[in-house]
Amino acid sequence: MKFLLDGVPRSALVLLALFFAGLLFAPMVANDYVLVVLVTILYFAYAGQCWNIMMGFAGQLSLGHALYIGLGAYITAALYVKFGVSPWIGLFPALAISGAVGALIGFLAFRFGVSGVYFAILTIAFAEFARIGFDHFTWVGGAGGFFLPVANYTQNDFFNLRGSQRMFYYILLAMTVAVFILCHLLLRSRAGYYWLAIRESPEAAEALGINIFRYKMYAVVLSAALTALGGVFFAFFYNNLFPEQVFHISRSIEIILGPIIGGIGTLFGPIVGAFLLTGLAESLREVMLRLGVDLPGVKQVFYGFCLLVVVMFLPDGVWPPLKKKLGLDRDTERKEG
Image: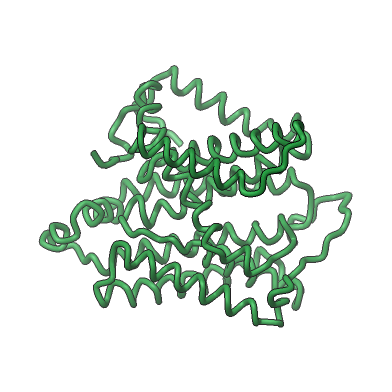
């Protein structure tokens, strides 16, 4: 871990240590509701970081990442319910298929020069194809939903991902830390340098001899496969899957809001954004429940308000100015600007 902390001021190290210690011990003092909120935050932090690989590093805007969440969720859930395959085994075909779908989207887009907003529309189209397809795929429940067996477990069944919220919390915490370290390593690698060059100017990158098709494909496939892994744990935590919910564009928007609020292209941005957005949204919901107020759609309105404020006053996200205040304004993340 030393390579992650080189040059970090001591005061910032103390804050990071306290933050990580808080994450480690939070389940021991949190009630069930708070634990569910924390699991949700970690889920969006993980998924946002996966999306960040495609958009923040390589500059390819996807608005259809719900596609990969849904594929990961449905494939592992179906293998478990229909054939008794452990999700730890089922995740391999889920990641492979999701990566292959990502490769198909990338090939169609990059081979025929589809980029920018048109690439984003293409990703939405594939997610909609999946939503409509799974709506009519009765083998996994169709529009009526697909349900995993639920039981009262006295002990955690780690092999089959059946157990307490605390077990899922620590699994998602490990996943979030792992994808953070992976992204840090990627940014320091040749691929990371090439991605940033492509993001800034594809024409200049190609003139320098970078195979932009290949490295765009790397970003799309890696992002798709890692996002599908988040879908695996989405299925086994919530125990029910509905195509209208899982593949809907609103699911994709929820994933990308964290990096946008926190800071696209930064390592800590998706984490900061997930904590701020989900934490504040759940706090608002709790206050409204205590007041007896029920306003449908208030969560979406709150998300829109947060996005508006950040775009107007913090266009680079919350993390870059916060990083300066913490004395972490180093070039390790190589943020644009």
